[in-house]
Image 1 (spheres, rainbow, N blue to C red):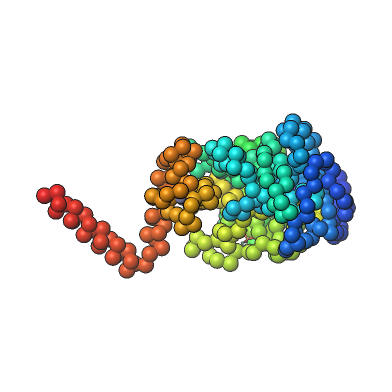
Image 2: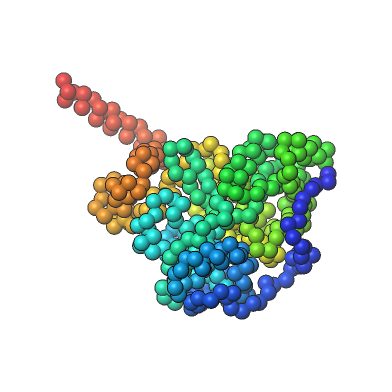
Length: 401
Ligand code: GDP
Ligand code: ZN
């Protein structure tokens, strides 16, 4: 393996690498209301015994000053660690809570960017024993966005990421232009990129060195870490690269090994590795919520299904993007099975009416939804539908005669 250059962001490396339990620090570092502990379920229970500081979640003076100037009395801050269908999971020094945004915020939200995203620091007030209300989003330091067309709003994938690992598999996936596209995306959001070349077990040392040189010739000043989750080469370098309290995301095409790498960093198989073939287009993560993981060495990792195809001109990403926003809005629809075409109390139609949802975007959604429904039909169903459509056209033409 060639000499691989990487920068250590700060010290404490040896200490960080020890497999120790998180340090127990009781209490928040900030004043403000204490929200009662959440119910003891699943992962949340762990935080009951391993209290952490806000700094360990990535909090710093930047956010502290923003919070102070927010002037919301009786509030405290927390970080959005996951985005679920109807709620956000937030975390502070006391543990994890479910949180909703306020009606006022919903009302003011115009773009996707106005809603909280994973990684955001939010100002919260208590609602009841188990839930909090998100009153405000603190200004973002960095932002990871995905844009699928010039006409449409960019979608925010995650916020406050310090370093974006751009991952390519050294074998079939390897492509310098793709690196570039991801770098642009990272740079636009103020995020520093670094490269992970994964699956180095699949190439010879000579090939690996050649590729590293190609990358260095093309890009100045980029850290490169080469890894294999099979032989575990480079995994220590990767773990050491990651600094306590900093937030990292993994960008790269599906199949390059992002989940495998995160699992290795977590030292447990929390994320399922791809089981379904790429050919079906159904990735294993299609239904998983965006999620933040806390590594033993203090690093924070965002695994984000939305970042999987970021920057790639893939229609599916576009569909998902539109769907995301509409699914979000549809939570406000009166009927659970609302089709957002004619129903009374439809929040999607209301948003279109109030120009909060772009009309073209909405039309696109309806069109794409119909198309996807069409593709889900069996061939027989398609033929029947086509025949019915043919009959309809014929009848319409007959009537015109
Ligand atoms: P993701 O879609 O980027 O999250 O990729 P996954 O982590 O799901 O991995 C995709 C496939 O690549 C799986 O079959 C993994 O077992 C395999 N894989 C991951 N890392 C490596 C590696 O370092 N070497 C080899 N040969 N295969 C790997
Ligand atoms: Zn609706």
